[in-house]
Image (cartoon, rainbow, N blue to C red; front, side, top):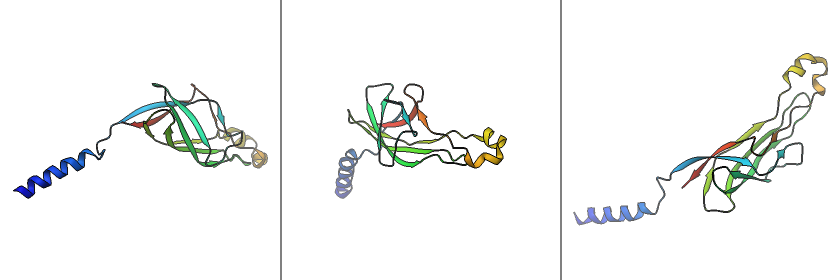
Length: 136
């Protein structure tokens, strides 16, 4: 019986230190300034966003970037690994975006389709809003 009580006490003490039941809250973010793939962006770049319901500034890392190309190849941008710059809040989530597809142009000009460039990605402050999870 005393081993059981010792086990129970150690388990309670150990479990209080582990955030097993962390709460996650959905938050909305928008870029601090205009982000576009028409400017130079590369993998590993940091992009800043602001959380709409508080004053946090969140920095994400570009983990994948493919520029647009000919034959209608649209740009691809993936942002993740978010960190708060001015608080201890932890954020998780991924933003994955594709550029505009020019399907109507490609269908109309099938002969010249190889010369049509794919769409760029443009993210505007306050207009484009994304959802992340904040852990408490």
